[in-house]
Length: 223
Image 1 (cartoon, rainbow, N blue to C red):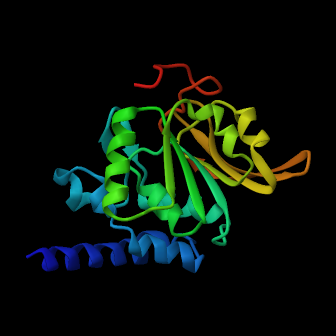
Image 2 (cartoon, rainbow, N blue to C red):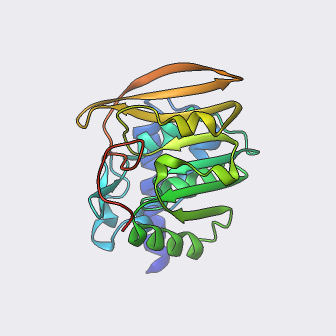
C-alpha cells in the first residue's frame, strides 16, 4: 500500500514538472531534478497531501503558505546555483524550499520567525535526511551576519523595500532574489552584487505573504 502511494506521488511530481514548470520556462536541469526528487506532499498537512502537486500555494498554518511549485522552481533557478554555494533562505516555512535548495547548494542557512513552523520544518527535514540545512528562529530581515557573506540569498516573503542587510551580507557576485512591493502586489527582483554596486533585474509580478521584521512590514515578533 505504501509503495502504491509512493508511486502515485512520484507520478504527480512528474506531472507537476511536465505541465507547470518546464512549459513555463524553467530550463536548469539540476533544478528540474530537485523538483522531481523532493516529496512536496510530506511538507503539508495530511489532509492537503492530495493537492500538494497542484499549481497553487497551500496553507501551512500561522497565516503562512507553501509557495506554488512553479514559483519555487523559478526563484531557485534565478539564484544560478552550481552546487558550491552558501545560501541564506529567509522564511523557512514548511521547509520545502529549504529541501530543494539543499540539493543544489553546499549549505543552506534558513531563518524562520515562527517557532512552531521552524520546529515542524526541522523535524520533516531530519526525517528525510536533508542534513546540510541549518535553521534558526529570529527576525529574517536582519539576515545572518555571523555566517556572511552568502553566495545567494532567497526571500520567500514580500518586503516593501530591499532590506540593506541582505546587500551587505551578499558576497561579491552573489545573487539576491526577493519579492518587493505592496501588500497586494509585488515584483520579483534579482539583485547581483558587483563589489560596491548592484545590478537589479525585474523577473516579473508575484504575490507573497508579508516579510515581518525590522526592515520589512511591522508585525508580531517571533512566536
